[in-house]
Amino acid sequence: MRTLYFILIALLVNPLVAQEQVLSKEEAVKLMLESNFGVKIAKNNVKVAENNKRLLNSGFLPTLTGSAGANYQRDDSTFEFPGQFLRDEDGNALTDGDGNPISRPDAELYKAEAQRYNARLTANYTLFDGLGRLYNYKRLKEEYNLSELQARETIENTMLQLFTVYFEVARLSENIGVIQETFENTKTRLQRANYSFEYGQTNKLDVLNAEVDLVNDSITLMNERQTLKNTQRDLNVLLNTDLEQLFVADTTINFTNPVVLDEFLSNGESNNISMLQAEKNIMINDYNLKAGKSILLPTVGLTGFYGWNLNQNAPGAFFPGVNVNNRRNFGLGATLTWNLFDGGNGITQIKNAKILLNSQEALEQQVKQEIRRDIANAKGNYDNRLQVYQLQEQNVTTATNNYERSNERYKLGQISSVELRQAQINLLNARTSKNLAKYNAKLAELQLLQLTGQLLNVDL
Image 1 (cartoon, rainbow, N blue to C red):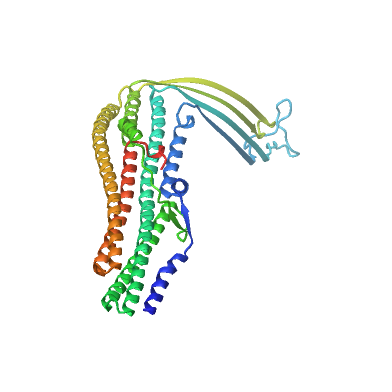
Image 2 (tube, rainbow, N blue to C red):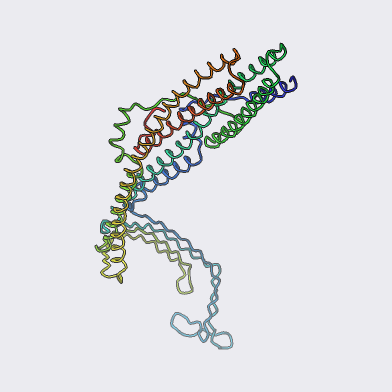
């Protein structure tokens, strides 16, 4: 017996050594919003959409292009004058001492340098493009709004996932308390059975039954504690925190006021995240259609430029001086472009855009019908689970009274240890079932709040 006690104490005390920190629901949500990987990615997508909807990406601003160039050239040249002779001022050919005409000498040009520089600024602005960029700009704004809704959907789904795990941690923690209490009661029964056996009041069977029950309770407690640790690590993954930091969940559950819940339900369809996204997708497709029709209208553009050129030519054989040309120029212009027929490609795109818009409108009707069904199902599930929880509370009261009476009758020798054990198991099952029903009802409420678009607007 002493060996059994030592083993049980070692197994049941060691798991309590780990350091645990109570994590409130508000703190859990805060950590999730700050650290969860999926939430971070969703927020980054919103930032990208926000950049896309800015004026810098709208096409309404002009373009300005600058260009510049420089060129350097050096020449070494020799100019020959075959058949040409030197002449005096009167045009007579000069002769040497023998009377032979003197040939004109070659001309050499050494290190003749030339530089050319230019710079130019060109501005272009589309004055009118058939309203295409206007509708594209509006579409980008709606895509930003859609990205915010998608981020909200990600946060809501992650929050439901978070509380599924969080409430599981809370449930297991409460179950461990119940099992621990059952274990202590069984240990007390074993001690009483040993005393009764030593004084000859009972036989060895009661002692053996109590020992078996104590071992079973200890195994159940050990398994529940291990499951709790695993679930706590699941919670750490969702919160992106250290896996060795085991959080303890708050077991307090508050249900939403029925009057407030009915108000949420009355506006649930219009606030549903899927419905809001469907409406945004219709607006986006409508702007795509309007932007596509811009191909039927002309495009008017303005252009302007300012340029500077500097040419510095090297002296030559016939122009011995340096030739410099410094020029500045400025120009304005306007263009009108009208794509009268592009082979039918533009008309095809417009037709396809109309079809996509019709499909999106049909999808909105489908989403609306599914939302009505989902809200009705979620409300039914919530009401049912809440009633189950209330019944389980009554069942715990009944099982508690039954166990207390059975325990008194066992002390008086009116029932056997087997009958007492059955009452103990009934109480254990009733209390753990109540814990399960409580958190199932709360999760059903959170699912209902998500469908009505109020999950992020209520106190948990």
